Image (cartoon, rainbow, N blue to C red; front, side, top):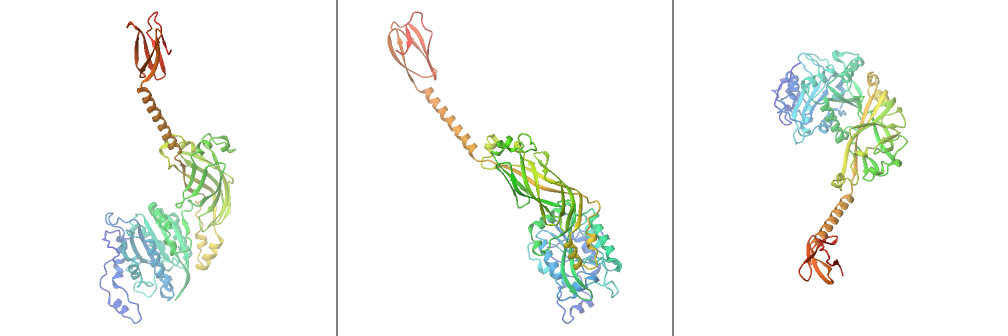
Length: 554
């Protein structure tokens, strides 16, 4: 296998093409043949090298968000998809490519069958870094001349090796880096014209289930009846997410909905079968006033708590028989538990759940400890008791609440649902569909989960939000204003002169003094007889001379 080579990657420009052979020129001049854009073709001897180098470039040259490899099968079994005038094969490939890519992505479009000396496989048809210009003409032009391939020096049609195509793309095209590999096939795997396609398909699925580089794998079985030398009822589109980053890129693409506009059939999940097999939808919340649950567009479950629930929730009325600790009121939540692992029916599994919030793990008491006979896309009711850690949120009258007036404090976390002793089987509807699309193909047996997959885990992101009104802030501002007014009054009272009446040896005198001052008092002979002390709280006489007649008032 040729190692990856650094090649420049122009924006949606096909790789260089040498002069066509005389036979190719004659074929293009043949009557009734659709014109072929010569610049979109690749020489046979250079095609594998182009695929190997197209994506394995220096990081500076390929700073694209996503790397895509689109593998289009053109072996002998695919003959009717190319020769039937009513075939939508190439049109479908074009639309899927356009739906998957976006500006900045790296793109390799390649044909594959089985590699032989002088006929490498896969063969690159187009290698580009996608810009913001329309790409339909480039993709359609690269596919236009593609036909069922023949073995070198023979009239026999080429064989198929699905595993070789995927493995080569992982190791050479992507160079072991993250990305998405798309495979368009009639699902007949027959290397060296092996008629035991069932066994070869099983080997291909072993690569999918046990290949460590493949983190996520989806399959889209599609109805596409075609007739030629052979006949077929349908085809399969696989997408393999390589590496953890590739899995995130695939999830992000599916969330955009672009692919679903082209392929309306739900994807059948091949891998992983031990993650996100169920989903929880809140239906009703009981027992905790001021708490509402909702599901956000990104799938996060949000619990909105009124600021008053933090104090009310700690009382006895907000606790169930589960005896939640003080400050940890327990909410009774009714859920819908939905099977999200199409096309599998969860025949049986044991259920357990917990919440992870504020750094603490708390078990969630479930009304049922098992699920049975849950078909894909169907749901069943599930009751639970869940503690809400409002004690970790600021109180309504706390300084944090004042600072957060008009906004919300957010406590991120998650709800984890664990399925153990899990038993899955293909739904009957899916079996019947596969039998109609791929008669004689042991797909139902191959879709059976590997024996080591006996459990799964689903994580529901959760955020607890406490909404704070402006009342605490207004109360604080009112208190501050009152203090300021009281302070101003005290200043005025302290600086304003007060009228005080004293009687000195029968003579009534009226004095004007300020709080905090002391005023000496004298008799008619000029002798000091007392001292008048004035404060904000009253007046007192000190230093009274013995025998002197001095008093406050008349």
